[in-house]
Image 1: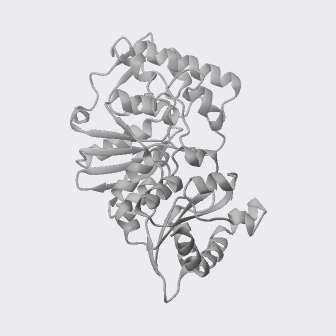
Image 2: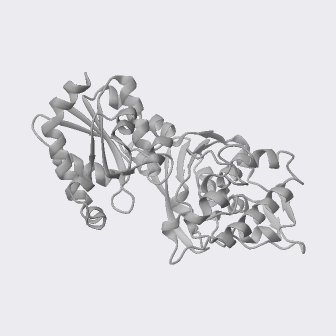
Length: 376
């Protein structure tokens, strides 16, 4: 019996690799061969998935979301690099309370530059878990753009500071960007501005009050207006699906010529997930919470789709699920194993997730023949 474990992180509890190891411990047996492929949807965990696929780990010192230097890992294989915005500009890097007005994406630009220094010709930019709502202005600044106020002085970092923007000079952007295939890995289809824009939809998740959302929206509009003086397509790109990803870093990426691909498909490609599925008798996938967002392009549903195409049964593990049984079945899961069924206290479940996943793994091992027969 060959079982493939392809799980994403259990946010706030376990990384994807750690969750997979816990499941593997429970599944272990003389009649079981286990294959582990970490997966992600383009957000946190994307670099881990690349490293597990054989990429080399690199480290760069970059500007964190508050301006302090932080150490960020990225992955390189040949002339391909995988970088993760959360490693440089993520909410988890904030030293204290959220800073929705001042947090910057500059460190993500630093990571792109580090990938260029590593001779990357293709750069996958995974976004998610960002702390900032600055339209990607920090990314552009880190790569050589000058953002100036009415006195010709550089404006401060952060989304709110864009309201003071008077001129932008893109002539000093890193020339190496012209020869790079930049891929924005995201499942977010929001534009930069408006009711579905990054300030209105995502800034409250980063600590913004209603009043601060108004400030950020006005500042981003100012950013697009001033960019229009040097880029005729500034407004059109702001309206494109995905430009609102990661506080507007999607917009900066589009300005740099990026193409957008679903994050889960990008990760599946460089991990060669289809090849692993083809050799499996059963696939186990999952993440911390299976909910409506999962159906919009998260890793477990992507894995389930790939398994279904290959005719291999797939089950899901999760901390909890808010999806109805018919939704889980429609997503392709032959069975779903929430940790909440074993430990209903969410705090205890998160604390003891590894031990609970080991129990779940043992239960799946004892049910494998039934699961496979029911799916055939």
